[in-house]
Every structure is written in structure tokens, then in C-alpha cells.
Amino acid sequence: MRQAIAHFLGLAGSTVGSVSGLAAAQPQDELTCAVDLSIRNDVAEFRGAVTSRDGGKGRYQLVIAKVGRSGTSNMVQSGQVTLEPGGRTSVGSVNISVEAGSSYEAVLTLEVGGARRECRTAGETDLKL
Image 1 (cartoon, helix red, strand yellow):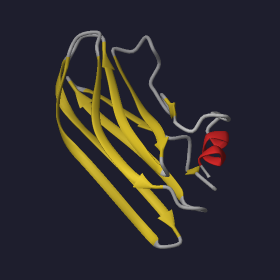
Image 2 (tube, rainbow, N blue to C red):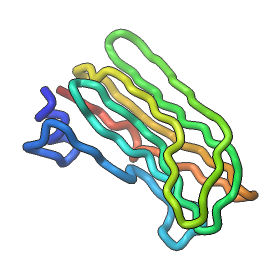
Image 3 (spheres, rainbow, N blue to C red):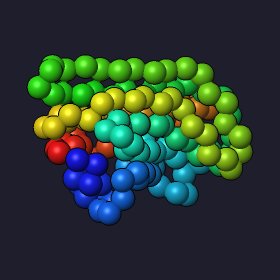
Image 4 (cartoon, rainbow, N blue to C red):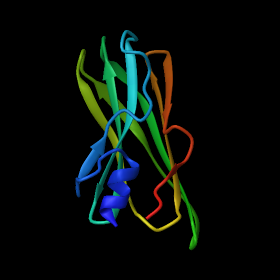
């Protein structure tokens, strides 16, 4: 089961893996973001990540939508964030069970110092087992 997920994510041969930067702004931007995904023991962990050239304070919102046989669920985490200049900061973390045939989408929205970024998975990530 985990190997099927790993294969889908390009991690064939790995039982634990991480895909970083499913969507991100251009590296030269002063504010970039990504949604990191790791799979461990049939649980998918989505984690928001932000890099800021100049640092600053702002807000984030991480939304995970899951559609599967058991129905639809939306998980939302949001809050304030302080970014160090040139550093990478984790914002929000959501764990969901991986079910055969379920679809997942993650969206991270940031507002820092007047700049707004939205990072999302490339469409829906279908983790078919």
C-alpha cells in the first residue's frame, strides 16, 4: 500500500517519503511558499512552509480538502506567523488518513507585509492505493 503511494509520488522503493514544494512562488520573489507532503504508515501529513527574503509578520491559512468513499471533509488551520529574514518557517500541519480512491487538495494562503501568495497542489492529488 505505501509503495503504491510512494510510486504515485515518485518515491518508488521508499516506505517513508516527502515531496517538497508541490507548488511555490518563483525563487527570486521575496516571499515564497510550498505545501510539503509526507506519507508514513498510511497517514498523509501536509505541512505549509514559507521562505521570506526580508522577514516580517503576517497571517497564513492552510486548507486541506479530502473527498473519498466516506464523504467529504475540509480541514483548516490559520494563524499569525513571524518570518525570519532568509529563513524557512513551517506553518500549519494537517494529518489525514490515506484511503483507496480518495482525492486530496492542499492550499496555503499567505499575507505578509502587503504581499499575498497562494500555493496549492497541482490540481487534486489522487492517492490511489
